[in-house]
Length: 309
Image (tube, rainbow, N blue to C red):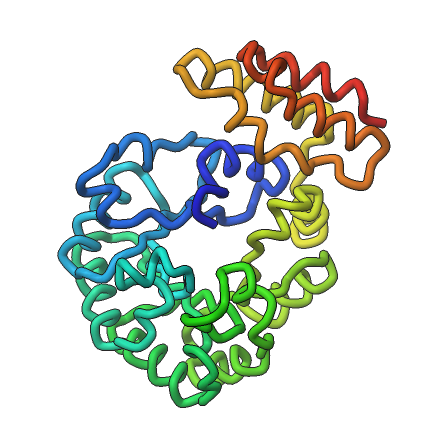
């Protein structure tokens, strides 16, 4: 979810799902060691619980970044071993790390030694067209031996050559049964299911059958999905209504704009909020209008909300 689940998106998603664990976009070790740390790690206290997802393959660099994550107040450090894009392959991290489980184990151990936070791993089930169960079992097993006990399993292979990141989310077949087998083989570990979870029924089923469900693009395209899931999984936890969400986001935007944040990046995650409702098209058009965004006036959220029935 690079360039998607930034802190503004997470603040918005927290309003829709008060109890969910939020994850940052994947942030590379180089971006933190050589870049603008506050820009990458700053977040609102309202986002808790929130996990920092790192991308990298050097144990010392990952340990350093894990310490930064703990210092900035994150609740979990997650190592991404699932992203299949060429961009991460060139940096020798993401899904291609699954070919080097011993290296990943060293990285996880270094992060565990550096912080007191949980260190978790996100991974695929295999590489390219090898669907051997032994491959993913041995990968998980080496990390299990380091003490890692939480695995977020995207239930597809990663095809590193020939498929785009988008194709990798759709074309390799889903194999939920393999994640079920991992859960049986490592009974005291937690396995969170990811991949193809795009309806409330499927997500709630996954949350019941496994130790959690991770939702990515579906929540971006259909934000209402988060609220419906939240109401089903945590029926005793109230969730803000539409008017409250828009008002809270306008207040948040007002504070961020005063610090120089462009309004367009704050409203971007909200464009799909009312998909399927009367007035949704006018909502999107109003909040996408360059002239409205150029005013840097968060009241455009309230003005756009007037179109929604």
